[in-house]
Length: 216
Image 1 (cartoon, one colour):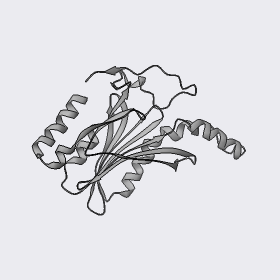
Image 2: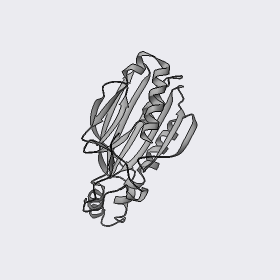
Image 3: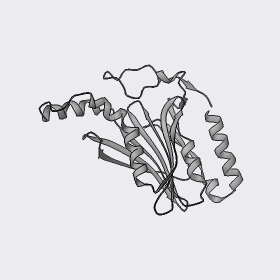
Image 4: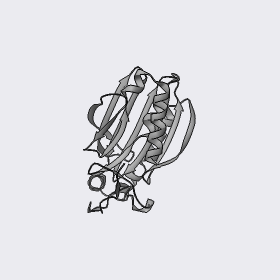
């Protein structure tokens, strides 16, 4: 699957033969355990956001902006979600139930996909996707200013990964960026043997089997 995606992307770049195509290189984040083909050096910004169900969680944004558009990987960290919801339950004197510690994370793909739809003028593609048998979702939209958005969202081990390219009309590089994400473990590509093996949300203990990996 990875080889087919990467081959298609490289073929597109070679066919274009442009300076933008030549800039695409592989970027690896050891901290967030992913790699992706990027059109240039990422700047990295750490921030926080309010989740759908009202807790404050860490966000790390990797971004590159050039003549073709803006390319980002946003990693939203839900690993502390259960503890934060449990604390909120105490503060609110039990006005809601602890299951939202897990629901908040599991609903994150749908929550962020809605944000992308709401910002769009038209939606050209909106469907399920997966990488290495990690479930996700992909969208392609046109925005009110005429730019195109190519987005891919995956929840893996309590982190939400939002890959998003907002590119100028006619640019081919949104699809390239959208298609080349991989999850890593100890520097090797994760590829689960079955969908049920892929953890969306880590158990309270945080202890899970090491994910199966493949060489390229």
